[in-house]
Image (cartoon, rainbow, N blue to C red; front, top):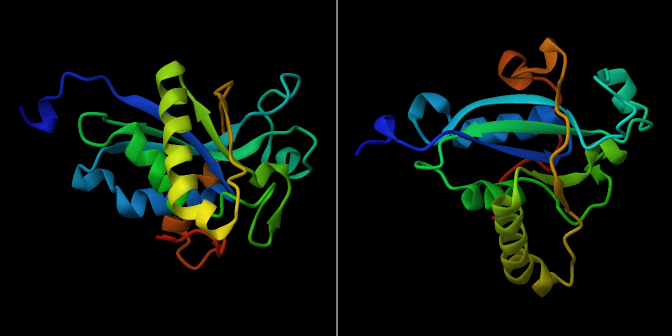
Length: 181
């Protein structure tokens, strides 16, 4: 059976790792939809905030008062790329030991977080986090600060944020968004 005739339904993965432009960009550079590597589409947006803050704007999220994280929502084909592989890739592409920051970007909206969609994803995220901790951070005496929590409401960011670094190749990119191993 080829991947194009997969019987599996697409799944959603949601990650926050600093400025969402760079998070989306690095995932799509390594898993371009046109190359059938498993990622079907992405969107950047806001999640993990106060229930009283509905459909926040970028300006509102940047104040830190909504508690939302800038995040990327990835629709993927699990017959091509596993959720575990995406979680490990997430850890490879940012600084998961930093609390509420990535490089010069400071604030709760830049926190490292995995927003899981169901118990199976939560179990996988916890397992992969432990494996990454043991292999890459315990030897350095560092502790992963990434939050793992159930996904809540998702709000797409404004249109100009979507695929921003593809439309603006010289635009700002957080210096922590590269392959760390």
